[in-house]
Image 1 (cartoon, rainbow, N blue to C red):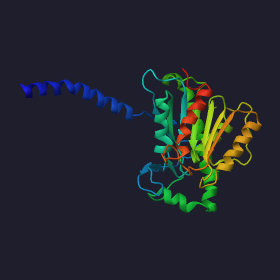
Image 2: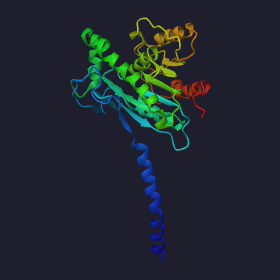
Image 3: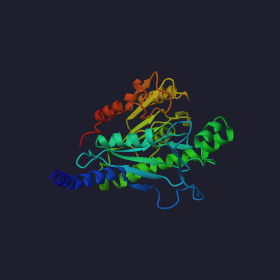
Length: 302
């Protein structure tokens, strides 16, 4: 009788287990959307394949050789969506994408707060090896590579950022999004994409709020703040290895000088590329401050 009772209990638990497995799969199985109906403008001849690197000097998973830009959707739980959407642009020196701590982890945090998140894979400089991080490090200070990145790659990346915002707005009804509550956040190179999309836009691609996190802001030689510029959240660390903190302070000053809303957080420690990584430093809390800022700007209520 004891074995029979145990068998009945096991049979009863199977439907619960199946539901749990299906739910877990549903959380992981995200929709991936090509940004363009065909080849992206300006890179029609790119024919290389997107790849992933698990072992590299950054000690994190990176995606590289992105030739076909996409958005991966992270939806809030049923009944939890508040109508706000955020495009998330990971960094990686325009050579790779730090897809977890500056992409997926951010998107999951936002989805938990009721925000529909879209992780953007924008076009990248082609890697000739399977170690894009080493290629990036070796290319630093190389004038020819720098010119290619600045003149060709970055404009494409920014175009992908603007296109991503326009896509989300055009499909707002499908995702239950308020078309006036669409923002963009980006890290390092993704911060440059974010800033670029915030400096030049039309009514379809305008972000309603913007968050460049330790961006490469000096790419923009003379920043002209749009007349209807959105509120901006800026964050960096004083000990940023690329020295981006002063540029973030200058960006903040430029924004408020134009009488536009801005908030700035610069931590004494945190380094470059902290993203969602836990380092037991005050910079670990930046995402919570970003959430508070969204509340203050009316982006967290239904």
